[in-house]
Amino acid sequence: MSLFWRVFLLNAVVLLAATALLLLGPVTVSTPVLFTEALILIAGLAVMLIANAVLLRVGLAPLGRLTRAMTTIDLLRPDPRPAVSGDGEIAELLRAFNAMIGRLEAERAASAGRALSAQEAERHRIAQELHDEVGQTLTAVLLDLKRVASQAPVPVREQLHQVQETTRDSLDEIRRIARRLRPGVLEELGLTSALKALATETATHTGLAVGHRFDPGLPDLDHATELVVYRVAQEALTNTARHAHAHRADLALRHHPTGVELTLRDDGRGLGDAPEGAGIRGMRERALLIGAHLTLGPAPRGGTEVRLTVPTPTRNA
Image (cartoon, rainbow, N blue to C red; front, side):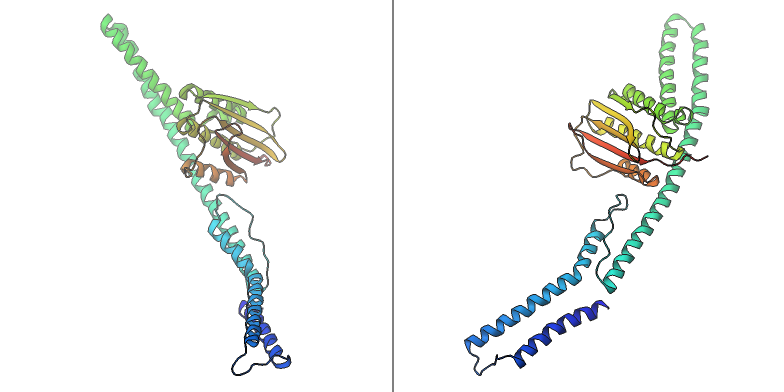
């Protein structure tokens, strides 16, 4: 039954009941209207309006839930879909809305997957060029400086040594950037070793004390999942070092009933009311690609906690 006919029949039932009471009941209307007759008519009208409002409220309640879902839904934060209730067009509308959200989420996941794959490929290319081109050029400059310094007078030799140190520091920085763009240790030694190296490198270059704890015997993850976990940890540590005003952060990778769980807690100033930036939304997009669940909130002892719950996929052969 369509929404129009449901509303029409609800009103018709109420009006027919009121008409039957006037025709068959003992109530009559005099001219002029007596006070008691006016009270009876007003009471009957109030009863009709209340009954009509209750029936319409019950019939249209699913539309209210649908409206709230439409105004609050976020494709990066999958929430339970509105329950399909009601009859006829309302139930069909709810089913259509849920199907539309499913298509949008699938399309967004596919689009984000292509974008992140292109991003990883571009990072790989830039890291390779930094290592092969800029790195080798600076290495050649260091060798030339060493050769020239060995033949230069003592005052000039000291200045050349300072230039050597500056060049060596620049070479180390380029290598560090290349490692962040392409974590070779992840491919060679696995996720745990890569996270340990990330914690050590962050502590060395930012002054942030980074502790880490990794459960032994963690389940195997495929390469795509390991890369997502690593990138989320990398982005979370970067945000902590840049924005949290924290002194310490603790990185952990533990067993979870359905897989593994990555957590990062810091003792900084917390998230506050600041809107989510591109880094956090990027973490959410990566989490959706592997069916993981990402949450950000206050840590138990202050600061911020980032939690990534990852289901265990089957490693590809």
